[in-house]
Length: 502
Image 1 (cartoon, rainbow, N blue to C red):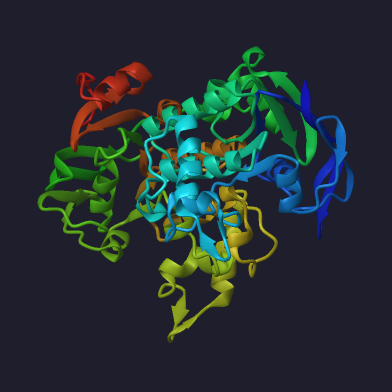
Image 2 (image 1 turned 120 degrees about the vertical axis):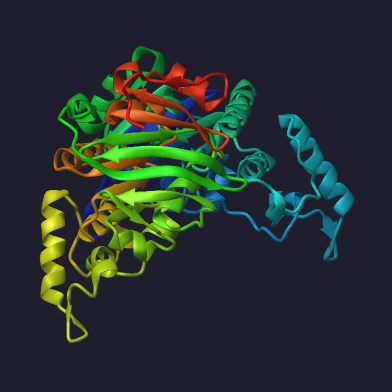
């Protein structure tokens, strides 16, 4: 039974056609994934259903009847709720107050907290959650806050729940919890529209998947009938499998050597090396200490013991400026909050670390800045409107390229990348992988920290595996597989490939 259908939806913004004649139907009681590259139009379509945007033309049908959705309130009246990636909660209020904000039970301005907490407890029990109506939202984990958003949707009797990148900030265990909730909602007849860049999630949780590309509807298929490569081809319109392969080439001299690096309470006796032309993955479960290892090498975290060598020279790196001077670049996993300078221009975002090198008598050369921007825009296929465009308005994939270009512009030899493709679409991922392959061929040493094991297996020469702050695996690419990496990452075994660099 079709619960929601859009027909011939069109939506334009100044200079951009976001959606062109998009028609798609969603069935009652299904998990329906909506996928596409950044800019494909999937978020625009969901915002139209959620009442944030109005269509230029086209029709929306809910339960077979045409619906006029012009506001969030209209969407909610038609049983549609949206859970955005950036959760819309009030941390200083309780779970109950957040769920029923705007509809608090009471009389003459006085809230009936007994009734409020009772109604909230009924909702919590319906999903089997382990939170209390009186808990302050500020004290909840990210996954628990996500559950509060779902409870808000249920409190409005929503039949259609749109989830936008719901696992972006969740660990593996929390993702499993979310999956359980989604399956329960489906069993109760709710329809889940699921937006995600993570294709594995699409295959794990969805019944059907619809693909948008360049603002046009490409097709809807039962998920079980698709392979990942087929879905990728629908999304990008081409076969990109070749872009995922590690480029085979001889390795050069050791550019980075880490000896016995230790930080009390985080990691211990970390020793490894990176050679010119080598891409090394670092895998491990959340909290294993790998991010702290990377930060210690870059000077963002003080280590207690151990030594570092760059290109055969002993170095004592205690702050990022020293790492940059010694040829180490770093790309953070948190692109939005600590990667880009959101209010600055694309030109300024590339050059901010090397202003002294671009200056004469204390004045920065705008011409040199433009030349540098043009060089990286050409070699890294960056897309932007002009040199004065604020970087906050670029897609996630293009923002990531600018953060990477900033590190490269400082003439680094060693590049540390933390979750380099988090939150970007499959096409942009392939471009990032191709860039990394090109860097390795040019003699850079690259360390990639990633939670996505297929990513490590696809692009890395070998993988270091961390468990509770120690290296439990050093695995060459010919021996890499997800099961082996996970055994090392969970402490159920160790594995060190014969002949792997240390």
